[in-house]
Image (tube, rainbow, N blue to C red; front, side, top):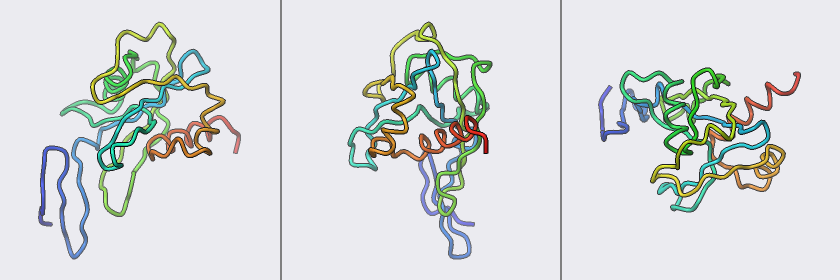
Length: 167
C-alpha cells in the first residue's frame, strides 16, 4: 500500500490498482439525530465547499479527537454545532454508517439524542450558519422535497424510522 496524498484529515492510498481515502479521525466519529421535547429535530445549516458552498441542512457530525469514543464525540459535536448539551445517557446508538464503501475506508456511529429545551446551553460554532428546529412530522416531507440530501442525515433517519416501525 502506498500513500499518494496526505493532509491532516485524510490520505489517499493505492494498492493493487485500487485507490481509496482513509480518514483516521472518522473511525470513532459520530453523527447525531437530536430530538428536542419529543417533537422537533435539530438540523444545522452548513455550506460545504465540495457542494459549491450552497446551504444544506444536516444533522451534527464530526471526527473524533484522539482517544475519544464515538459517544463522547457525538456529545461534543452536538454541543459545538448546536449549543445543546447531551450526556451519554441521553444518547442511543442507532447503527453504523459507511458513506461510500468503494472509496472511503471510514464509518461512523449514528446516534439518537433525546433532549429538552433546557439542554440548550450556548450557541453554535463558526462552521454552522444556523440551527433549525424542524417538526418531526416535517422531516420526511423535507426529504421528499429534496431539502435533505446529506448521507449521514438520511442514514440516521432511515435507522430511526426502522426502529419506529415494526418490520
